[in-house]
Image (tube, rainbow, N blue to C red; front, side):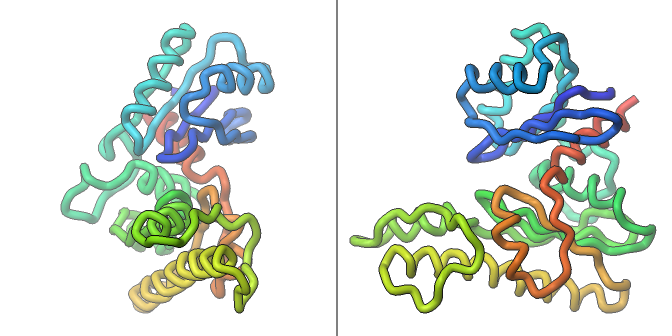
Amino acid sequence: MKPDLVADVGNSRIKWGRCLGGFVTEIASLEPDATATWEQQLAFWNATGKNRWVVCGVHPPRRDRLTEWIRERGDEVLLLHSWDQLPIRMAVPHKERVGIDRLLNAVAAKTRVAPKTPIIIVDAGTAVTVDWVDETGAFAGGAIFPGFRLMAQALHDYTAKLPVVEVPQWPNPQMPATTTAMAIEAGVFWAVAGGIQALVRELRRHSETNGDPEIFLTGGNGSLIAPVLDHSVQFWREMTLEGLRISAEAIP
């Protein structure tokens, strides 16, 4: 199936991509329940006619709500929800438990590296994933930990006086921080950045006998993280959506 639009339903936002000329050329980050905004986005893209969609998501109720809305419009929709729908091999014991967004990132990344090149993929969103694609091109697992918003919310929820602090809006928060809010912001930012650094370092050590890996970075907070990482990374905002497009086009 060759899609006109692709959609990735996350835990906080829905990301849409517009497909033209064999690529995802435009993206939009939308509220998960704002159908009026969805219609406005289609109008902005001049895509109000009949469209072919591919949808995936790690939040099944919201994913299914979007899918139903698409069908009610009279559009065609393909739902990708299982690893065995994707053009990728798996080197983990419980294939069905891996988040499909992690696998779609791997599908996309494999198209940008030479054969037998291992890959590290960092996705910095609500949760942060740091994943490994081995030199055979198989998804081989990785690590998951809380992102900015989850860490900040946990500090508020499980302490008596710490306020809720918004996700940092710029890289490299001031240190030493001089207010409680700024201290939380700095702590959350550097905890995420440092966690990514440590995990990338461990995976690079793991790859010493398999060649130097390519490192990709994506996710809603990827642009904030990229400037402070020690290793050279390729920031690819559309990675998950490209994985959706590539996977859909691989289905006969």
